[in-house]
Image (tube, rainbow, N blue to C red; front, side):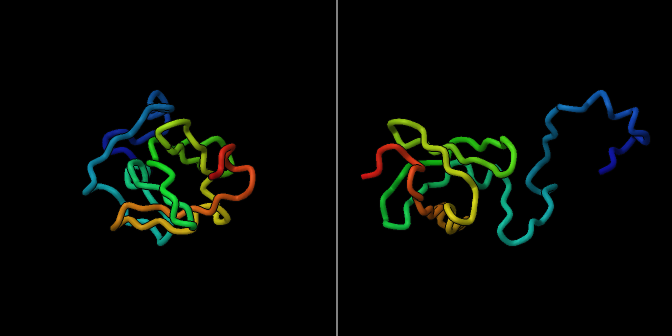
Length: 109
C-alpha cells in the first residue's frame, strides 16, 4: 500500500493505529467467500434448523478468526466465523445461516 504524497514509511508511521476510510467505489473486489465488515453488520442470522437468532451488530477480531456479535434481543451471542458454524452468507437476501455446535450458546431452544 502506498499513500500519495507520502513516499517514505517514516512519513506514514505517525498514522499507525488510525482508521482508514474509503468510499464504496474505492473498495477492491474481494474473492468469493470474503466480505467487508459493513456488508455483514446488520445481516439477519438464522440457524440451519430455521430459527431466527438475531442480527449481527459488531465484528470482533481477537486472533485466529473473526467473531460476529449477534443481538438476539436478550443477550448477545458470539458466533465464530469458522466453516463449522457459518454455513452460508447471502449478501443479496442479507441472511447468514449458522450451525449451532454444542456449547456455542447457553440457552438452545
